[in-house]
Length: 169
Image 1 (cartoon, rainbow, N blue to C red):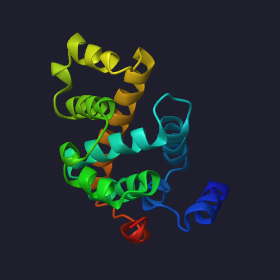
Image 2 (cartoon, rainbow, N blue to C red):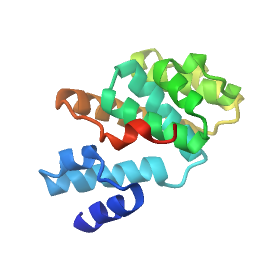
Image 3 (tube, rainbow, N blue to C red):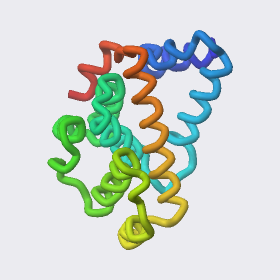
Image 4 (cartoon, one colour):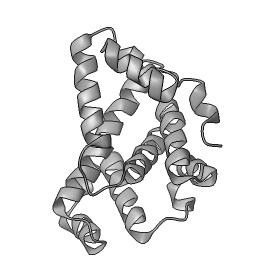
């Protein structure tokens, strides 16, 4: 993990505080990093921006300061739009999104707010926007992961690195 931290420092100019928070236990840190990298960087029909949009929409529902700051910055950077990043943090429904992206985020928010209410019609709505069953799995997996990390960040008073605040503005 020392090499991974050095790579973060090289690429990002910092080691994200979420990684430092997990550093007390190498096994937990390695599991977190592996799962994050698979969900957010691994093979998927969802773009990196799509996955970051999900992270921010879910984190907005959960009022997760850490993830809204860090992943809001990622949305600003990946989209090239500071406005989109701010809209997503405040209320994704205010953002000018493609219909498929809106359907994706509506589903991710449903996973967050009331997963027991999900029915086949919700999955079909995604299919009608061109998402495959694998894509639906990926949307749900990213949403579920950020629900977990939002809760861990809030429970431990995890604070975002200051660098995130000024990124891509």
